[in-house]
Structures are given as C-alpha cells and as structure tokens.
Length: 158
Image (cartoon, rainbow, N blue to C red; front, side, top):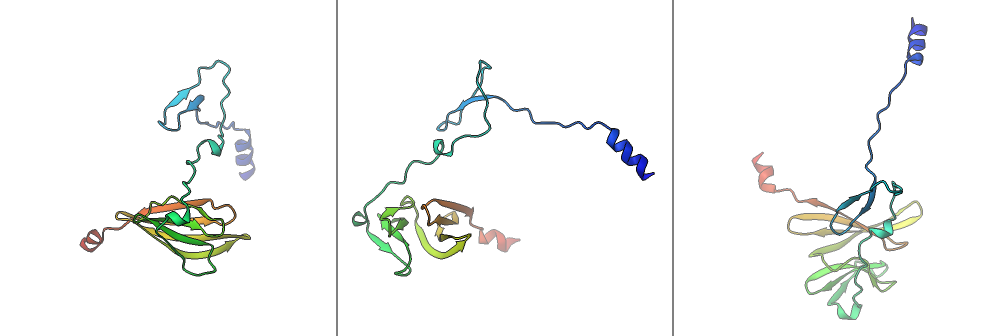
C-alpha cells in the first residue's frame, strides 16, 4: 500500500502559487509615492541600495559647544553629551556625535563582544516610550529599539 501511495504522489502534478509582483519604476522616499513601471523597457529589481534610503548624516556639534559630557568610566569609548536639556551619544575617541542630541534621558548600560566585534548599549527613557540603542564600535552604526511603556494603572485594574 505504501508503494502505491508513494507512486501516486510522485505522479501527481504540483501547482505552486507565486505572488504577483507589480513592476515599480521608482519610489519617492520623502512622500512614499510609488510610481509604477509603464512597461516600456523598464527593468524591475528586487533590491535597492541602502545608501539611497539612509537617514541624513548626524549633525556634528563640537564638544566645546555642548553643556556637558558624562562618562560611566574613564576607559569607556562613548559618553552621553548634553546640550539645551537634551542628550545624545558621543564617541570620545573619534570626537564625533554618534546620535542626534534628541533624547531626554540616556545612560550607558553595558558593552559586549560578539563574533570578534564590540558593541556598546545605552538605555533611554521618554514620557511614552523607552528603549535601547546599540552602537557598533567598528563604524559607529547604531540601532535604536523603542517600546511603549506599560500603563501601571491598567495593569493594576486587571
């Protein structure tokens, strides 16, 4: 019986359904408007260059124009720089801003080695959200992850 079932499965044709992909000529990154391809020799691509959608460069504010620089230890490479009541991450060894100075509360959390590279992590806190920022020490690229704060009153009511 097993042989008959396997033979039957092998002989059956298999249909695969693929997604229909709309050919796109271009996308306006500021407005999000998609301009469809008109079929006149435009090639569709499934990749884009990351450089074309990257955020504008981080404004570099000289350290002497900032109000203060806080470091958790003299051996740490990064510090929190303050200006006009807002803060951001500053690379002390390169003398450059890593993030914009746009956070209300920011602090160094820890440094970790992963796969031979070092990463520094910072915590931040705002009125409605909190999160972490991870900075790759090799090139100062960073990623911020935010999450909404839990409303403690709603938690108590449950």
